[in-house]
Image 1 (cartoon, rainbow, N blue to C red):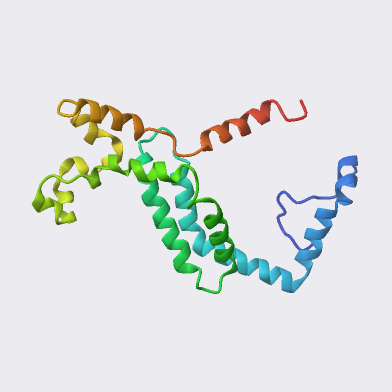
Image 2: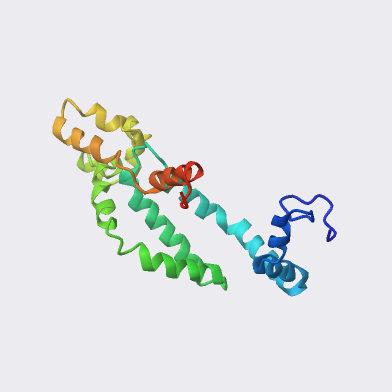
Length: 199
């Protein structure tokens, strides 16, 4: 209707009552008016461009925190520290979005009740383990240890089950803890397709 060659998911005129009701919807009218304004459309374009550049880091973090059934618990604190650095290093740039992100992150993450737990259980990250004084002084020596090439798979602690049965048992329990409520929230979303709130 408005110069769009192949409209998708755009409300098109029809004779149904639903369309007549929707055409009076204030939100739809506001969106239409906004998109007709060149200045507003330009701002939206800038924001979309900004997201296309900087969203990758956030999406990767989101993917990490939504992992299920993977032994990543000891690595959460490191991931949070990297995210903190990413946000703080970009907050000086003239980007409003980073200021909003920083404010929200600062309000919820540093003092989150689970933060101290994430910090403590880094002890089960094999990269924190020192073998001898020589290797202790040079972190590059860790790369020479085969078991530490992929520490998140739990193989390192399984290999110690004979020498350190109690410690390896504790480690294998804790590294498999879920790191977010994503699975629960995802399930509730699925349940809503079967049984909505009104029912």
